[in-house]
Length: 344
Ligand code: KG4
Ligand code: ZN
Image 1 (cartoon, rainbow, N blue to C red):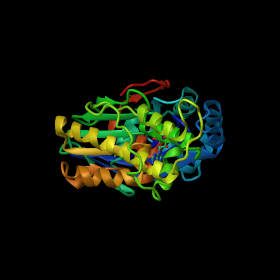
Image 2 (cartoon, rainbow, N blue to C red; image 1 turned 30 degrees about the vertical axis):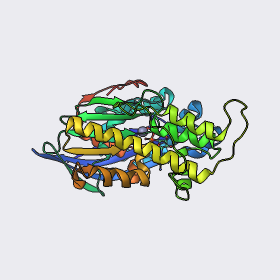
Image 3 (spheres, protein in one colour; image 1 turned 60 degrees about the horizontal axis):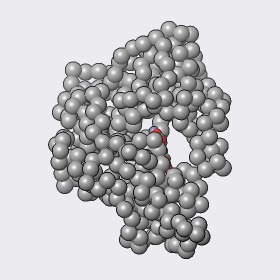
Image 4 (cartoon, helix red, strand yellow; image 1 turned 45 degrees about the vertical axis):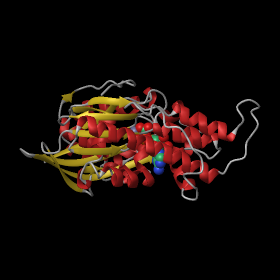
């Protein structure tokens, strides 16, 4: 049994998690001991998006309290930890530095090795979490096709084995979560857009507005045309005059078009790469309408039990996924440097 302490601070959540892990010849046993997340939504709400300087300042203030809480309210419990795992990138440099510097300091103070994790690996591995205790097998789940949909990324990732990633498609402009946030701003609904639009969409007719699917015949994604189409339904592009629209119907039609797009591309990738396991993760995967349609429509191709979606609280940014990826990785260093543009 080994204990791993993980920190995630790449954007606007300060998160820490302690897990226990045991490696067997065929599998990893994982037990989640803590999962602490301090959200900065209230700080960034009035700016309509993440304000980077305020994000780093908030990480600085909450890092020690979050870490202490993740260690049963006693920072000295870190003595029992075997290794420290942290998000190296990608993300906001000021935010990432708060996590990596905390880990560098703790590693040298307490003589602990560091495991560096990519934020996207954290999203992918969060999808394996089932309750507090679960098993991740080493072989019979591959190849995996993972759709990561967040505020910064919309990527289809093909994995022949644990920790082996090939990005087979990504967005050429906005990420899916970014599109939710921007459309919410266009409609004056607030931040973050995803949960607000999901709620508003419940009362709308998803077929009221016909909206475009970007790059229909390709694997790559594009959401900027969809965003502009929504903009032009709310404001005349020539006169800039406000137009009348039904907010519920527009939210529902927009959400449906994003989900149609994600399912269409994933289906194409399933045909091309014939995966055994399908993963849906990242902040947008907290969306119930997406979760439902993704499972229902893609279980025609992949058995339902092989479609992995994290519990909703592990869809958005958290440190549990970072801890699990760290447990699988076990590649140690003594110092970690943040990299805002880190590739998988
Ligand atoms: O993974 P995440 O927490 O942070 C990044 O790595 O970006 O994702 C945040 C994104 C935001 O754009 C947010 O609007 C979106 O995920 N999101 C949602 C929902 N909850 C969060 N999008 C659609 N429906 C939701 N329920
Ligand atoms: Zn994320």
